Image 1: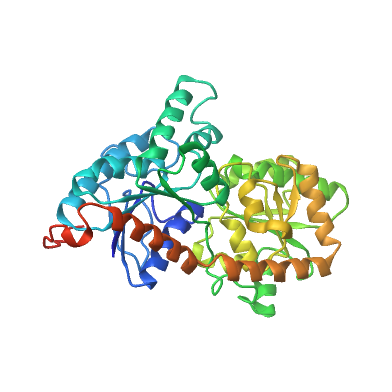
Image 2: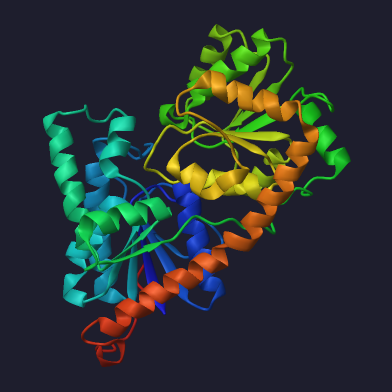
Length: 409
């Protein structure tokens, strides 16, 4: 099967959405299928997946993609590139990520009658609100909400990053559209507790000025406001005020300098260490420095794939009680009400005081990650969705005109 993965983002960068795109592609390739990723001009290449990129915008080649007005131009360039690729290559499925990808693919691929699968990773409107790109109850808010409602229905099938999202879409859209939960996965052979030897762990801790016996809380992800970094810093300040000696290793980007100033203002600049961007390949080694993981994400609609990395590393995890994080951690998580920094700090303190509980939770979380959240399992779900769509597509795969594949990338 030939699959075009349409990614309206600067793939690859070292954070959740990109990891999902990459690992889905790798898992499908491991099952013998061809996957090509079509994405924006900027981003890092990966060695094992072909990538097609758009032209850069003529006026601004060096950009960071996010909720930005420039993104409209990027999507126009992505649309042009998609038309060229479809005209010169044959694909059986288009796997479109995010709402922009689903809209572009569903409209432009119609002449080729290629089924489109929408990889839904959270509410578009809620994301724009969290990034403060639009204001609540503004005209832009109403427009984007309407666009989101249209896009939710436009693809041939939808896969969601959480079961809750799948249930919510089924309740809203009914049963006429194929909707399947496709939770994030983790490569448990790469993310595992013994990735560092005791000597390597002590040496790497020393590199960051952390003593061998100091308790370490780790966070890995985007340093965005909706990830709850301010609440992490407040939790660190509360524990320090209570006389607890804890180090916090905060890994991610962008804006580390801004958060360092916030930590200094809270009096914990010596306790909270900001590493900056951590390449995905180095994430297991960095997470292995921790004794506890923390997930203070505030979003109620987005997935939280980092949780699975924590679980595979055997890290007991303190998290805000959001649907996605509870879906992964289940009864093994230590929860705080969303936005309650005091409860977040208390969850960390309780785990620090109970080393036996930390070990037991870590072992059980690792076991759940291995048994229930492999990327191969996700690929099997995807292939079931693809085949169901292809079996109902007219003309059928066998009846389609078979032109020579020029593979013009």
